[in-house]
Each structure stands twice: as C-alpha cells, then as structure tokens.
Image (cartoon, rainbow, N blue to C red; front, top):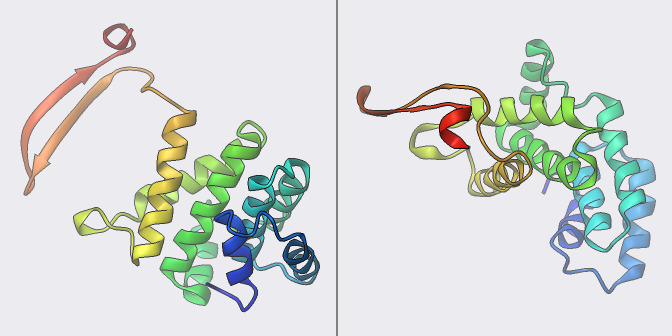
Length: 178
C-alpha cells in the first residue's frame, strides 16, 4: 500500500472506516507528518467519502502544490517512476484524479488533464495498466473522468484495429452526435 499508514487510509477511502472517528484522527496526525502522495490521496478520498469535503480538498491541494505528480516533465516522471515503480505511480495518479474530479474538477483541471494523459499513455497489451490494483484504480479514474466529461467534441474518425489491420472506421462530428 505504499507506506505503513496507507492501510488505514485505504480502508477509509473504501468507506470501511466511516464510523471510526478515532481512526480518522490517527490518519489526520499522520497526514501532518508526511508528503507521501499515495497516503494523502487515500486520506483525501476517505475524508470526501464521509462528507468532509473542505478538509478533503485541502489535502488534495497539498498533493497538487507539491508538484509530486508533475507529469508534464518527462525527466520528473522518469525519476519519480524509478523511485516508486510504475504500479504505485498509476495508483497514486488514479486516486488523485478521482479525488480531483469529485472535489472540484474545474479547480484541478490542469492536473486532471495531465493525469488522464499519463494513464492513457500507460496502457499495456491486453488493456491492463500493470498490477491488478493499478489496473482497477486506473479504470476507476477513467470511468469517473468519462462520467464528468461526457461526449466527444469536434469531428474525426474512430478506427478499430485488430493485429495492426484496420477493420472498421466510424466518422463522428458534433452534428452527428446531436
């Protein structure tokens, strides 16, 4: 789970701890001592899940302010990837994206866009994104993103390829989708 305290934060994020205020107090104390983006993303999501939206957003802003997920910098991404590994980077990015979308999509829009770009560039053969957990969390982030930003804008063509052979194309445009 990334760090020793992440299990409690993960349980909070999944809403298991919603009735245990003392555990949230422990997580709050740990959050003051760490800049671990994985822990902070879990903790922020846990706060959001129990209706503490303002506190959740403040924690999410710490992750944003730290520029830990500065995915616009290829060098930063390579260094960060080597430090924590691809699966943990995908999980952290996915958790942050879900939080940002749930808390204030317009405020966190630049980070959301960078994160989605990173997730989509990380797809592997067979549609997976790494470990099972990183794949599940990545798909959760992509689904939440598609729920918030519905529809395709503009015009173009979607093509289906099988073994590098184009088997079908479908044109789309704003006029066709309305």
